[in-house]
Image 1 (cartoon, rainbow, N blue to C red):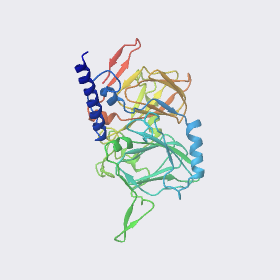
Image 2: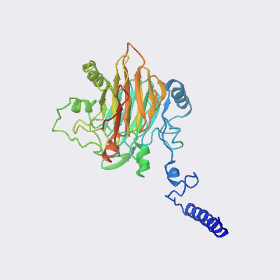
Image 3: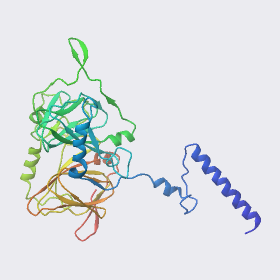
Image 4: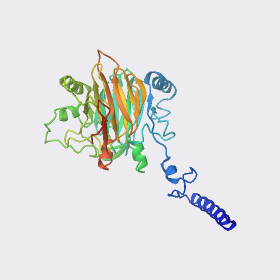
Amino acid sequence: MSDTSANALSNRDTALAKMYDAIAEKSMFPFWATSDDVTNDEVRQLMATKHAVPHLWTYKDDIEPLLRMSADLITMDDSERRSLVLVNPGLAPKRATVSTMYTAYRLNDPNEIMPPHKHSPSAIRFGLTGKGNFTGVAGEDITFGPGDMVLTPNDTWHNHGTMGDQEAVNLSVLDLPLVETLNAIHFDHNYTEIENGKEVRRKQQTAQYPTDYSRAIYGTGGMTPRWVDHHRGGGLSSPMYVYRWDAMMEIFHRFRDEEGDPHEALMVEYTDPTRGEPVFKTITFFAQMLRPGEKTLPLRQTASLLVAPFQGSGYSIVDGQRFDWNEFDTLAVPGGAWCEHHNGSETEPVYLFVASDEPTLKKLSLFKSWGQTEGGDVVRRA
């Protein structure tokens, strides 16, 4: 190489270094690749963002001891909230269990009711222990037990707690990481009602509906009363605010001998009874039954999943990694991961509670699904 060529190359390298420094200083990113060297492979750098990883939190070892410690140390006078959010190791410190959702666990002491609030993220509560879990939502007081799912929709006033003298544990699933990414988070704690013509702050909502209203109005599929207003709360979700586990068990009992789907076994989606769509526009929920000894074929989808075993024990294989789970654990299955579930018992069924961001991906035309056959071939499902 001539001295002139060497000087030109050296000058270019110096100029490139100065340009890259200036780009970074001005809070920009160079989207081109000048070589295979990591330093200058901007495509590789652009893709090197944080991603959720498969991860299991065990209730007995990881969650319950800290729940009980928090109940001893943090009172309602200290904070109106006392929940443990599961943070995916691949996304930390972001409060996210997978990229679009998080799961949180809460232990409520007896007769402990928090004041009303509302927020833009949509959320559900799923009962784990105790019969006195309580949520008041849009004027409907709901007491729920193990397996019952309660909606607290986007921008709808609600408050949580426990009714009676028995502690209760539930888990929540929120689309908060998704809403946060879209810069649409808002919370409101200033709950008021009109009394004698004046606006008065209250610590608990006044009941406006009879006990078990949701089930009475919407509990019979395919038959919807016309004399009631189905635009409840903000009108942004299913108007049925509680889904009882005994109704889900009736479905599983009725179809327990069906062949089911080889990649999902017997899986039932919670839906809006007035439209047949997911309960929320962003996230959806399922109950999944694996009969004794049953396993699912590997399934891969762009949707991310939160899998919470509710009854029984077994294991899942996510991208080749085995996770052994028991009741009340939570397994994070990131979008794009291969996943299969195995019932560990030859005599008892397993029931899983599953949350998914599938509705968001479908609205954006980003939902895809693949399955493996018994012979190992990959087939497109959706």
